[in-house]
Image 1 (spheres, rainbow, N blue to C red):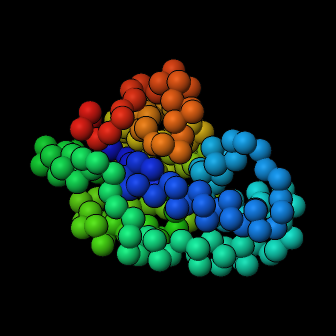
Image 2: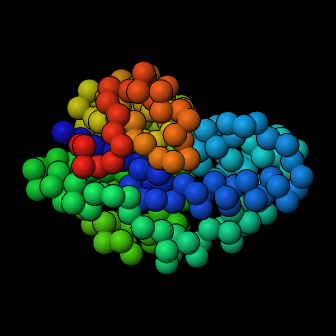
Length: 207
């Protein structure tokens, strides 16, 4: 089986920090935003989020918004963010059983790679992919077609795990099997996730 894991909120317990770095930019610029803004921006990647923020009224150039995101979050990813419960044990088990393990995330490599390496997980994955590597976001089915192609797998053999509704919705449209992952920051969408996905887990011990 080919497993494709999201990073923030799925492998690592980082969604609170990730959300704070994003909302801080809107708050300090006095920009109003919809109540489900985190659900909207999570699959977009940092650049897509910066462009979305500009559409909401942030006047800063995209490059400056990206720099602010980095300054707010790099310390957390480099030194502090932990794995979610049972992640390490489950990944080791799946790897020992011969499954292909891969990452597809909206987080940029400069945060993704350093965090996975610090946690001793990077070497477990056959591919570590960021939306920075594609011209699509995780809210578009095309990124999942391209991910399967790069991995060298048939879509029907891929299982995608993510805590974000829009991401799993796009993956399901692309034909992947989907498993929703509980996270405190998306708890209000648990019912929607359970209705949409092929499976839903509270933590990795349930895989």
